[in-house]
Image (cartoon, rainbow, N blue to C red; front, top):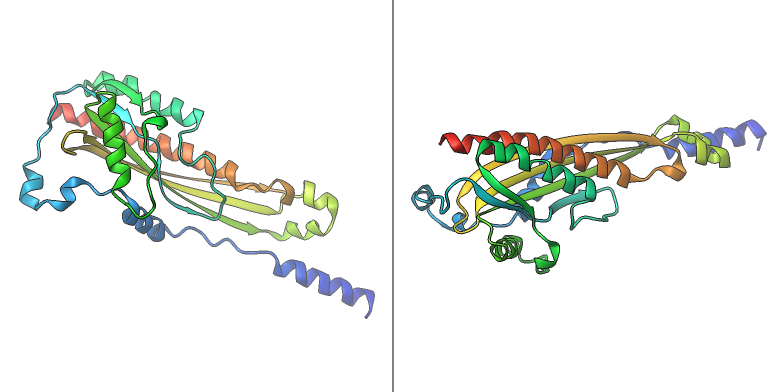
Length: 245
């Protein structure tokens, strides 16, 4: 076989390894969140009974934030899912001042993970039960539950052809990592699960790296943080309306 033919075969093989951007399936992500979210007690009540639910406390309330719930993760290896990162904790704690200013919250507390029992995957109501139990132990009036759904899209561009060389693997940015995180949360009365407020935020983050540095976790962490920021802005606005009801 001629040298040119060999080179052509190599190029074709490398090109076949390049993948196109697929995008994110929001319907799939939201469906997974709906399927795995903890069931509220009110889900077993009639519409009339739900309408008769009333707040059991007076504003302002002591609000605790549970560890994150994860309902969906695609395209990346999970790590640090069951606890808020230091940056995420700092972001959530920053909500205390504006919430206090609205007169809705008197104190915002991060619920310690060691107060939470371990849940089995086949018990969708467990997260709600153990969160409410832990919140009761710290004498909380209300509980904030935040669910995070994250998907990662991985694909390569033509620059990945240089992966055939050692230098290209380390220096040429031929690999994309895009992450989308959807954050949804509810603030409920810890006594009867009366719904105070709910909000939703989302964020997408992308990066292009050489093969040896193409790590999904960096874009996942960034998209989670920005989705949490988006959620926080909307939650503060929604919770602030409680004083006017």
